[in-house]
Length: 133
Length: 401
Image (tube, rainbow over all chains, first blue to last red; front, side, top):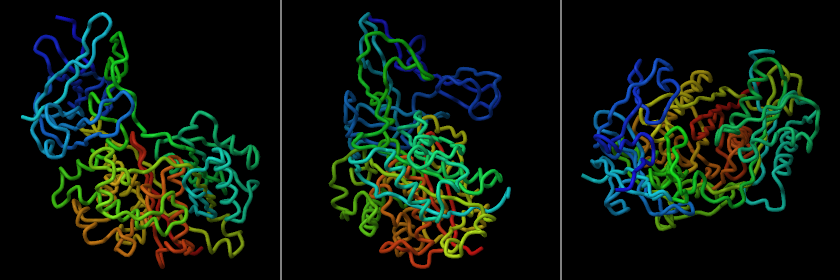
């Protein structure tokens, strides 16, 4: 099987993956997906623990992009997901038709992954999205 | 005098639209010279300039403008704050006067966007042959279209949809109504890029850009400039009576950024900064939202306008849909919103927009807005959002010295 690399570093593929991993402020508990120098919520530079985020959540907002930049495949559904147990992320909703009949506010979804490209050395880039439950 | 009130002495905006026969400095110079003349002053009277042009941010735009209108050696603050750039330029001049370092200053915002296409659209896809993580999220390739969208029509569509998720009695029909209203308003504004009325059906049937935003629900790319001359109250007292009479008081000038919220990294938060800025502005001005005679707010997309009825306190919490249904934001409604036609019609030359909002309110308070005049307007508010995020709010009042 070809080596796989995550599209973004907060997607964990190995071990118990796939799952999303957050940096959790040791002072206030705020979660960040991206790397931070100090906590964006409380300003503490005490450091971060890592925590696994839930695979499931609900769609709190979405759009269906019809007109995209060159090289970007449209249409696609962009949605913000409030994850069960905390945390929020924006990703595509996949495995359903990109129309307002098939994606709805409050819709429960679950994490899924898919290959989005292959490098010259054979490594596959893996993205995540959410599928309706 | 430090702490003195600050007034708008002169104001001008070019017609927004396409100006292929002019360059960005022509537009800025036209607006600047006309704002100075409108205030009965010259560049020799200015103590400071605040200048912004998002797409010329690294060019020293203020100094370039000086070379067109007068190099008097005064300090220039070149500012950039996304779509709040113009409001930031106004506030830089305001603060200079408030600090007692300047008696008068010029704020100018200008943009020449031509046909740039959709903004915020990084190319996506898989051109890379090697996957090396980069950036704060360790991405190995551009993520647009793979991890949702950061295109402007998409981000603001999602912001609007979030309001529908969080509130009852509001649906996508309200977004179409907002666009219908603003395009109807634009027919009275000769400075608007587009002055064409659309029916609800035409808006719904127009090409879809990013659901639910169809083309007429998106602000166009625009060329244009706007400029205002600000003056201290003490200096205003020495001006001729006919100049004093047209001056408009700045009752509040506020800039706020987005504080941390959990979903803010997933979807830019344009709500909290607006709520915080509005609260602060109303306190400083001693004005209640219900006192407002007109509001120019940041409808970069129809989906954005709805949120700000609520964020600016124009309606009951959660009541943005009802406010619209009850005709509140129409020009003959309770609190007219975007009687200029809004960014959807008037156009959105990024850095000019915040200054143009001050121009629009000033023009109504002076009773000089022609066909689109809100009769007897005494208090107005202008609001912009720069994604990232920054909210700029100015409250202006018709007052006498």
